[in-house]
Length: 252
Image (tube, one colour):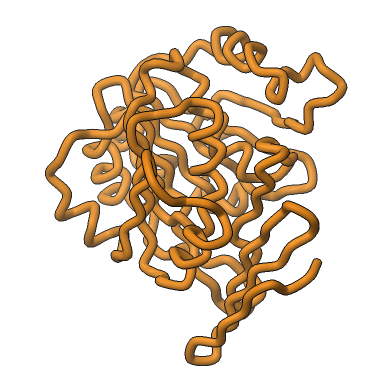
């Protein structure tokens, strides 16, 4: 892939690489985002961050919050499929937000990008709740993704407080060990905040995407919703979407 933009900030190298219409964001060697407007589903981990939106009716996802916006790949996917009223992206890295605007097309309605520390923003926020909250808060350490905010019970409680009555929380865990050490897995009071919990995974990725819902999840309805879109219908040979879904049960 060709490097089309690069910036060194205090020894940390930010790059945008391209191959045709595909854009990739790298920071300190860590692959943060990829998007191609011609193929809104690319067979990558960001597909799994988007999928939980289909657990509910299309019209019920009006307000979306993405903590750790990166280049904004999942924001573009959600806009493509759902056309919500607003998609707010929080990221403390100004270079990520620059790339999101200039190279990933995160401009104009319904997008809103905010340059702030996600933890500070969340604890200060007192506005309207969100129907979908995505936590993808990772920085870089020695060339590997590193959690920016510990997923302890207090943080889960704060994320829960940002949700509407039927809201969905989506959390990216880079490995199963991250899920099992999280506040939700370890703390029963945190588990009781949600009526349903599932995990999404994908071949060739260690990531586990946790889905925590304030209402009961109907997996059959979820699959039925996906089949309404050619790009998400796994019965079609042309789809790039691949995923596995399992109910989350602590201790197993």
